[in-house]
Amino acid sequence: MKVVDLGRIPYAEAIEDMVRIRDERIAGTRPDTLILCEHDPVYTVGRTRGADQNLINTGDVPVESVARGGDVTFHGPGQIVGYPILQLPPHRHDLHGYLRGLEEVMIRTLSDYGLKGERDERNTGVWVDGRKMMAIGIAAKRWVTWHGFALNHTTDLTYFERINPCGMNSQLVTRLADHIDPVPPREQVIEKIVRALDDWWQDWTLVAG
Image 1 (cartoon, helix red, strand yellow):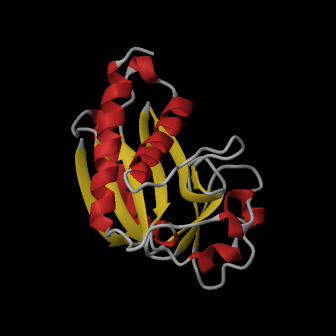
Image 2 (tube, one colour):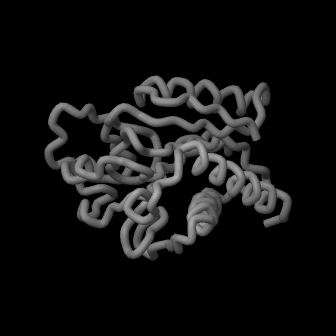
């Protein structure tokens, strides 16, 4: 799996890169690729009906409608955002299973720091002590995945107070920095995410569904 770290980049520019890489993967001219980045502040609205009603007071922060599943969320500095561009093999044409796999990747990553990441029956993502730390919103074209996950690392959580993130109360959002002292550096967390994703992907795709 090729890893591309775009650093901090405006959301619209990252989408352009993501679409280009996705289309190259569909055409078979690029291997499976994980895009990593950090966005300038932006609110994104997914395809869930009525999602825009969860925008409360976005102020001067731009709002983008996006092709992923899910509701409203925030992206900004201090997040680790990952967009896996992966070709799902024929025996794994299962987007629900893939989404649960991304949750598993983050659960494994957090366990390396002694944190118990959990799923919530009503909401996607990964939770720690009853608060959401990682959000997920995925899409696929011709069984190539795009969009992905956002881990709150050192994110300014006050941005979430301007929305109902994923339709929830903003107080249900947390970040890694509030659970680990000292806060692990971005590069270290990314290294653990990449390793966990690669391990899970190899296992999931090699075993027939």
